[in-house]
Image: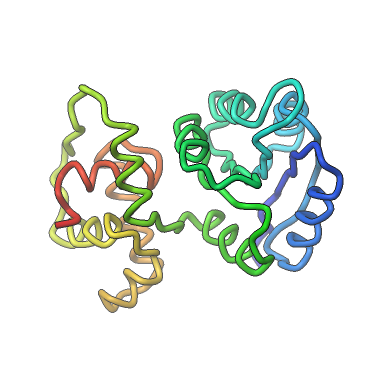
Length: 214
């Protein structure tokens, strides 16, 4: 069996931490290694435990979740941070993504939805909805030149970009193209490397700017 994904929970409400702890306990691919109640603890615990995923509340006393997210991503870019909140304000989500967050979960979602989403985060296959991708594109757009690959994308890689731009998961892409999820992941790794990008959010922006959603 593969090693479980190490998770840290950061939330200043005890009951919220208990709820997240219970959700994680239902799936053996996750291992809860530590809990904290503010941004400063999040940074210290990340340094101590080197987790794969941090579940981070946004609104906390002292250093909030957004500040802590930026600080952690600056020091440990590999760590995936998922913001957890009671608000579905898309501006909060956009701000979190700008600071390096990998995703966003509402506290009132059903536990099964949490598990499904966190699994997708862990395996790098979280789809972006069309509406969200468009908002991200608008918020992230800058005068800087759109990156162009030093090595041209293959026909298959461009085909996969079309599916990514429309918000499809790796599984959806694999089923539609009749290839394995592993193959899709390898194609995405190649695309990211060619474009000198780090994550799917940046890739979605690129796909929209290049018209792959048409």
